[in-house]
Length: 107
Image: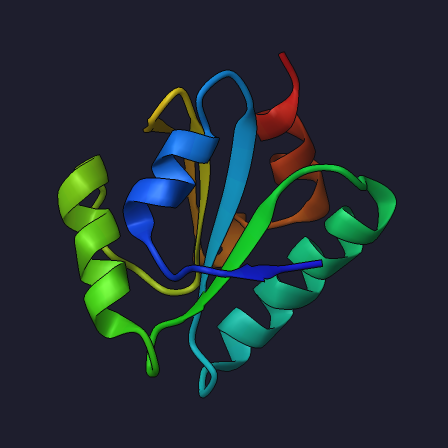
């Protein structure tokens, strides 16, 4: 379901011409656990959308690099919907739901 971010540049390039999800997850936050369930449920119903999981406690340098490259202030939980190398949609905290994700991936 999720891929691991090893290279921010690769994830940004992958978004050329299509949407890519990047979920910044805090392993210690109950709000983040709830948001992850929403993302998981969305992905179970919508196969084929590339999705990356970034656990901020383990991968803070990658999170910082995403923040710098995309110009989006870090929060967690945070779902970035990338397209054409930019953050087309940014959902934070309680904004992350199956419905808001679906709206963000529709053309």
